[in-house]
Length: 480
Image 1 (cartoon, rainbow, N blue to C red):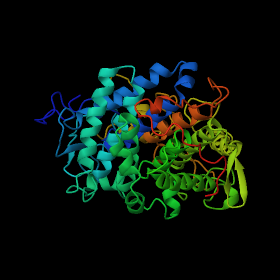
Image 2: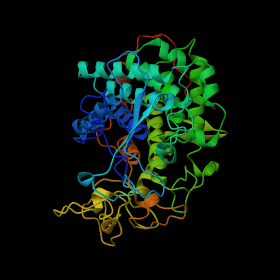
Image 3: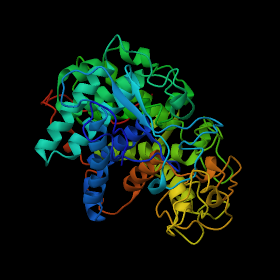
Image 4: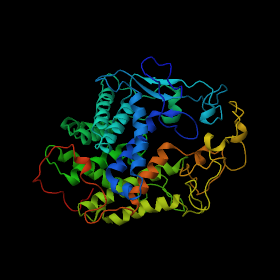
């Protein structure tokens, strides 16, 4: 409640937002991406959320995040020269009280929580612009708030695009680099420009997104394997799918067609890489995709890319396209949905461990999370910084069941250790859960429309001006 209280330019401080994972740090880069993901899922699947009684709930969650993001820079100004990138720190193998050295639930924190500031943030600024722009579409029924989000998005987008501020937000900052280092910013440029266009209808954004120099700088057409994996650090697959949406549903033609066709082809090739038969990525014997090459937190990558797969299937179905070619192999929309379902079913218990990796779901799920709030009981005792370690090291189940939290997941051999010390496997993350929600709502049949498909084709385009209403639709099937 005292976060950022000493900052002279933020009235009331930086109170709000979300903790990142099992610690108490607020990392704004993955936080913003999580809000973009949730907003995208609502824009596409609002009827499904309504059918499940979760529409108001998910909008409340998004607004909690975007209200906070608006505090992290001067969102009422047309131009800014800095933003706040993180609250709380954790030194590697540190010996002084901070968010990792101490094991305290948030209510008991008594150590310093310094705020990180960035005077250059092409990546973080771009992601924040995307988050605010996407949320502005979600809240179109609240014109005042939607306009506030668009104004903030335009301001932080301008900051991100400043040619004199192109140093990644995390560079040379040890408080960030080890945890959420950004490997580039051209993907955020493409991603944020796409969302800004959908939010505003301003042609300058789509002109930038389709400028042939942008995909070249972003290496979008280079066929780099890891660039096909959607994640908090790589937005290219999400951006190319967003732009494929424009081509598939509106087909604006010249002068955008050449770049849009390139993005569409890349999206098709990315989808090909999801299938084990094409040997792009390893899969565990139990069937879990190893999009991060066997490293920790495998599930957050599986859900983010399952969301894209299910969404692309719905896009194709909405324009009466049965599938696409992966080389000589014709793949169907059902193949894509089957891939997404296989990953979600694995997470929910159809795996060699017969373990649900979503806490509280099923008969067997993780009970010793790497999570300070879940493990520490509410027993009237305020534990000191290291006094809480007794709960970190306890062998028993968590004092509180963190219902709905998806943990990091098993290793490359389908093995899972339900131990609190195992943060790579047993720590839930904000990004992981945002991806899980998006993937589940995309694949569920609850509230699914009939006829033209499940996605809401119109909401995304409500700000987009009419572009070539008589242009012919793109071909029914295409080869990448």
